[in-house]
Image (cartoon, rainbow, N blue to C red; front, side, top):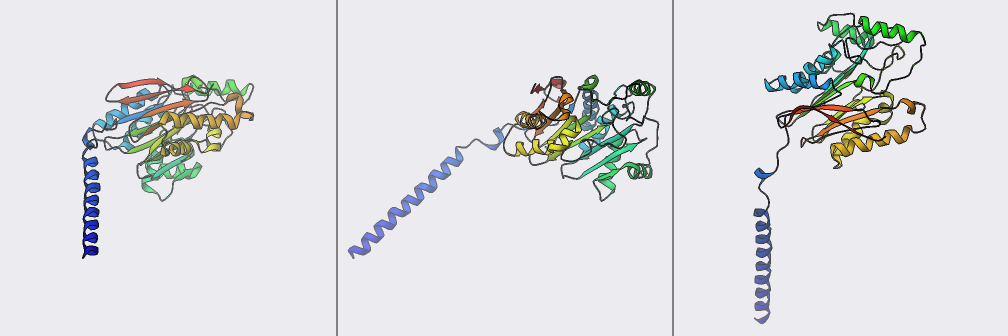
Length: 333
């Protein structure tokens, strides 16, 4: 009997111990900050490269506010730059290649990781809209050259002469020396990349450009390449690039920025680390003389950031709190 009493006593103590631990656990749960008090992400939010991003942001914001999808808002927003003859590095009015032809690259990506792109496209003013059609109406990610043009025409786009008188004059002046040397921070604008965090907290992005002036006919940069000029993961964040495309392609730049955000870095920290990685890999490279690369990024919490190799890179941000404004990126040099 004494053994039985000892057994029952131990069992009772054990039961009390278990109950105590359980109750402590329940107590700790009730003391946690209620979910409702956690700071909500800033949304919607738009971030885009360079000063012409202000006008693009305005249009994209207007579209979002009237209920347009983020993808359509991006197409409308960056379409402002594509149609502006005073923007010398995007769409209509873009500086041509060394043969005097304006060739265009663009890509777009939604929160499901569906994407579409066109490269080496000629005679179509809005390559970003064609990229969207590639996403929506084909089983492919990228169409290029004559195939991209054929597809655009089949979708109802019209051919136009994209070489403006101003751009042609600059090209003919360049022909006098015919020296290829990319210009850093060309006229304070370059590729326009746009990232959107919509009201549902989903990410989308787009990128469009006429590429480097005086490039070889057929050259394609980073802008239409998913993972280089643009990348997003809707669970993590989005990033986009501007500047010397070859350097971004060599390092899968935008994808690497997103991966660093996945590891817990802020958008600004991620942009900085990848920019410095590009700088270190190009310190003794032939491209170093005119190396300029900049990144923008936004995460699911609505935090944003930007960073570049050289000074001069800025980007436009639009949110409900502060409206549409320019922010200056820090730089390595």
